[in-house]
Length: 222
Image 1 (tube, one colour):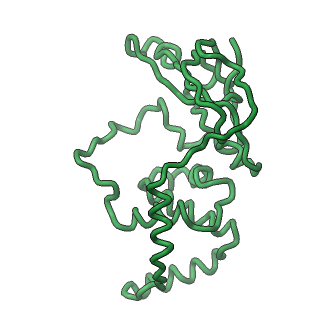
Image 2 (tube, one colour):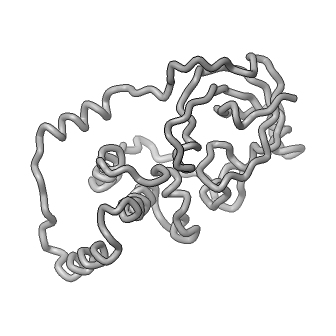
């Protein structure tokens, strides 16, 4: 989808701050949101990324990284029917009025260990499907100039651009299908190389290049 979240290649957002010895989480609540996002047994309709992308643009820009996760998670839980807006507003009003009140807490050491094990265990998006890739390594391709209504990993600045296939990763889960409400879909996944000049024109740095991972449906032959 087209939205404020697609910031690649855009101007006006200032330099990217590089924090020396940056911690994994700056606040305890960020780690909790990370755990909740990955292990809450209520699936967010359309997927978490799509939920974040659908945040109001002004709100999206005002929030920090994990605040976006939090807001999107709350909205997703409502859409999934876990609780209503009225119920959420009631609890929010209570804790604002009673900031010292202790929220309900459930101790489950076994669940904690399962979550920690899942976080530390490497996962894979690769699927064993009998699908042959259309494009060989070295093939000249062009990205489609597409504007889907749901989530996509094809950034706006790279649409309608020529590139070269430089690697093939096998058949992997196609994330765009989740926001469209489809069952799991898998496609061949490639690494493609764009020259800086193809993406940025004459303003590109000399000999610069950008490498992006692209699913097969993003590409067409040149």
